[in-house]
Image 1 (cartoon, rainbow, N blue to C red):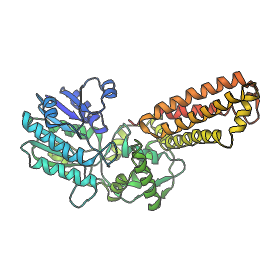
Image 2: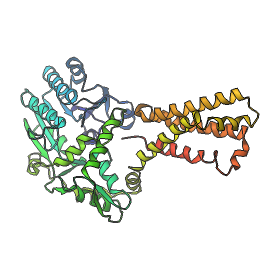
Image 3: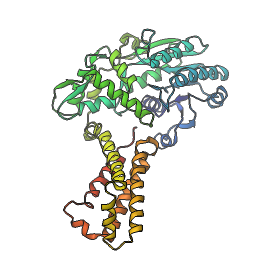
Image 4: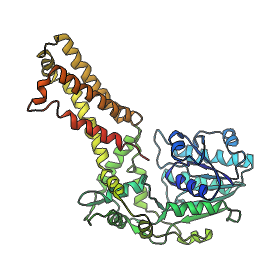
Length: 430
């Protein structure tokens, strides 16, 4: 069967794609940023399209000849990168029209457990609207509502849970008593594969969750044990602190950073993730428990590295931003004369020395500002490494005596460079 998967490189989409390829289907992966996906998932035929903006005509040309379409694309919160109305409502509406126009009968929509009229967040209301449009369509649709998706790969909310589980000395949690039902990514992929079978149910909405409802405290504690870390006391963070962190994360989203700790995620945690466990039987599926999922995927050193580095990564980025920004401002203000004197002491012309200090300070500030803009963060980190190398080389040529200075102005640049290297190494989000 020839199947198109929208959002095929996402967490859910990647597992669904892998399952369908193993089952012998011809899979066309569709997404808005497919360069890296082509390298990671070579078994798929990749096509570029953005669910938020693609027209009915564009979808028609992409979906011609397809026997089924699976929509794994979605967003959690409005940001410069994502618009919930455009993705969940307008985009799905045009997708439905295109499927009807070109004769694609089967459309599998990945929604979320708990979506309903009683939940009034933008995420839930737009997801519900998409479900309502499907119900009114002429397609042989099926809506799957997974619970919290746990996968061997770490991304989004489950990556945050791993980070909390790897936090040194304690388990920080917010809304720790909220109840969550889980589903394994591989179990979800099997469910999707059964949805494209010729005898699959049609025009139904199914929750996909294991019956056991766990508190967030339980989830974090079990993940900590899975990582092989000693038990730690649970610390329930004040809700005001959690909201302040979420508000800061919302602000960072406008700089291109998509943190799982945003306001929408916090609200989803507060409401919990619940669903009807009996629905999975309609697909002949028995979802594994959270403990069974952990047992089937033993953790290794890479999982411990990820969990321990999860909160270290933003701390490193903040440290680098402050270091380079303050270095630039100090060089232009209170440290200007001292920095100029270092160069003139080596025989450099005073005017040239002043210009060098000003230029270097402006470069430092520019690198700091480029670092906080997510699309240019990698370039900024690379620039920091190059500038540091140039600084050390130039210092060795102009003032080699500074290597022995008790304050270590040259030596201290080396660990700063390795901090930038560590940030560059861990910069990828998925």
